[in-house]
Image 1 (cartoon, rainbow, N blue to C red):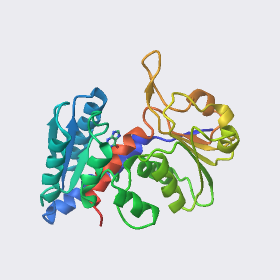
Image 2: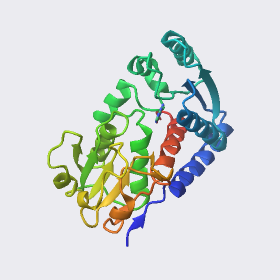
Image 3: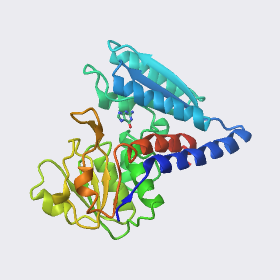
Length: 278
Ligand code: GUN
């Protein structure tokens, strides 16, 4: 029987724990404040930003909202980031990606003070993760570790294969699995004999950004399959990077889309906001 890993339930569990923690922090006079910046009106970004603000409200974190027009200059955005870096009443800064074409994403992310970088995208935080020092960790891969742990899945000693090498998911995912003592292989679009490698995986994390790319041929019997993708298919239904119907009969556990990895990203963002770097 294949276990369906319920990201909705686990993310709710985490948000409830954080809400309780925030209650205790507030009794000690410790509030938390997250500044969220969106440039332009990309509809998907608007949905994500609204969900982040809603989660803040649920947990008891103050949120500040900055909405810049698509035509705003990079300098305008950098000035807001600079101001927020210097404000003692702001604990976290999040610039929603993607940014408009005329802005340099790397430059903007580098401008966020590492100690306020709750997304974990700043090179200082990426570097700290890679050498095992404390720092903010990218929310989606951090959420996947929580999904596995809270589903009773052990990582230590397992063959872990990460399909995808993005800075936001693939690379930090590999680092986190390594930190949990997994044996990690990272595959990507240029990997030869891809199926041979993915078929070795006890834990397969798929973040390729292609709808239903991974089918049963990529998966070993009894593997645990984590699907990071989210797409709309021809009928307007949500689907992932994994062909769920083909893979589920073979896997011992799998994350569904929707309701798997997706809800965990915001839960871990909230975790970063509540816990800070302590
Ligand atoms: N765009 C898509 N995912 C994310 C995320 O996790 N953080 C930010 N800032 N932008 C995103």
